[in-house]
Image (cartoon, rainbow, N blue to C red; front, top):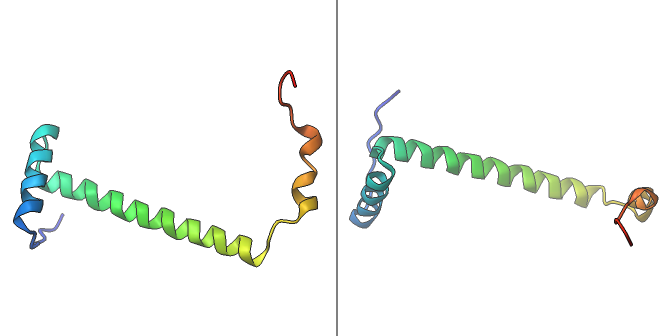
Length: 77
């Protein structure tokens, strides 16, 4: 691991300290988890955008999904 110096405002540090105290963890562990979550969120967003672009480039046709209508089972209906 490497040491990283960051500049954070006082209110953010207070909030982090409250959170770390209630979670019984350290600032460093909390920050690592928050950064991992942020990176994961960015990756999910990137994949969602890629998915949307794929459907825009190749839209689904009516016939493409209609094939499965006969296979649907809605219970007692």
